[in-house]
Image (cartoon, rainbow, N blue to C red; front, side, top):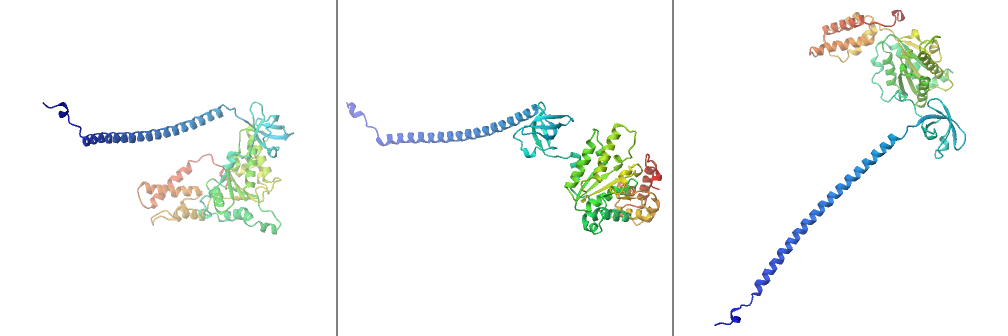
Length: 414
């Protein structure tokens, strides 16, 4: 019988070591995979954290802006006034926007050099103390009157107005281009011209051509915009208009439909009429006042010269009255040639026949004639305008002329 010691075999050292090594390698690889996974998760969490922090910062900025908007909406508005006198380092006399005069204090942080009589200031609504000094500003209507882009209309687009073009050039352009020519003769150049004539004869187009041909500042305004509701507003706008023209000099000011504020002054008038008369008086005083207008020229236009105030027409204000009449045969032919220059027409269309059939037509009506003829051709899907198109257009314009009502008296232009 064999002993127990004989039956027990010693373990194989090589196999045990190999088994332990394989377990260690497997455990190490699992740990490495877990480490890689955890590192990727950490990077993802870090990216999400940064993204959330950015969103929180943006939300905080948005909340801050909204809080500022709420604060501004809750803040009472300031009263606009003007300084009349500065008494000392703490007090000043101001006139508020409603015309009342107050003795108020002002912030010592405001620069003393800008605290001058006439300066525009912002006043606290409760205490009326001066909060800030505002820069001088013109009325938005006055600022918007300045033309920054030149119109496309030139003198070549005006037919039959050679004499009027010559007059306006020597009255408006020549004093700005060659002022020394007038100094040599010891005379003052014309201050301005007024264009009169029936509607549609080219008054505004002539002013546009002047704006196109000159390099100076061009300011245009319709006179009805100067007629304001409140007392003194119209006069203030006229004063600011002239101040803007002086600052932008050399400049040309064009006032269309001058009869809106330049009508004859009457003894019996309503409060609105009196305010219009105040605006006219401010315009008259600015035209020949104490302030020099050497580099500022004026052009006015109206189709009702019969109702203009005599003071507006006297020499020294509008030195020249340029009449633009209804075009004659030669002028109508020139106008039609201008409008038909680029229009494709058939050989049967005769400008001479159109001139004979358009006696008494204004320049605007002649343009309407060519436009209507072109529309007839387009309506029929033709490439050229025919004689029948112009005949139909002529009938249409004649019909519209017969339906006109409320025009100026015919004797005015006869």
